Image 1: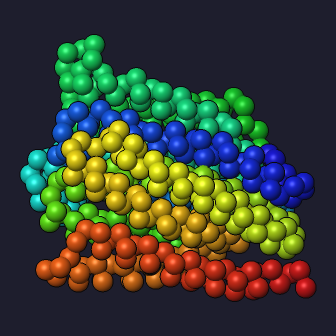
Image 2: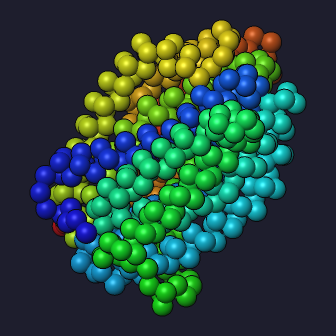
Length: 447
């Protein structure tokens, strides 16, 4: 356990965010490794895997419910020096993780085909995406065990073990991908099925490695079978905080799915270019997301310790860090977009679409970083409903207008990017206004 109620807040944020950013980048490498080798199979395969990868957002919605609720409650318990409460929350999160894994497994297999039919018109794209999902769903289901264990560690201020495990699993995925996708060394290429299988095997190895760490090294929170009996009151606490955060990821899934749906009229090349562009964007966003993930335990422990001044200071320090970082990344993304997209996309049209998307959305990087910081603060305060409210404003101001525009004769794919940038500004204004109210109400103990 690491006490985050003392010392430099900026240092705590950087020390926690840096390995998390690298770890998340490594985690994102699952998709990039798959895209790199799948790109050799053509744009139909790229478009299929790209659209199928978006299905992860639906699974991540469940994972966020578990993660955010666990981190918030465990960090509060650590701040209050209540180790038994932290252990109870962790072990109950394991039970919830098992339930979520079952839901993801059954739901993933049942919905893979209908999902791909809804997003793509080309039969080859549909077939590639469905096949990829069928082999990747087991890995998505296993993610919940990793989420439960890594969230418990993050709530106690520890991030290094998760980082090391993520590195090792991605190395394994990099080794397996060419063997299973292209058949290197075996002579039996599995294509997109191999991409999904490689990722699932790597995630399974991650579960084993992190479990070994808990059994042998972790002391503050640990596996206690006597705490595995379902306790509905604790579940309610976790889900009350986590459900809105999961809903926020669910809205992101809907948002991206709407884009895939409306641009299908421009063909598989356009969907492939957007798929590559959005993955690159997500990788670029990782530093800001890591800062927001660090905000939750830092501000959360100080909230548990009833130190209002340090809670507010955490927001301002994180907002400055996030804004500066995202401004630098926006410049990098603008100039490097052609080279980044060309690594994964095949054909001039796909590259053109991916580059156009990245250069336009780079204008909202700083605003997105501030939105992430606000989201981390809502988690720390134990009330994540404002996050879903602000995300809802963006979806409402984007989905309906873009669906209307897509039916007009003058509609161009660039209109989607323009509208996306504009709606981020609306979301940021909503987030800041809602956070101001939450800080005023929840820090009343300072007066």
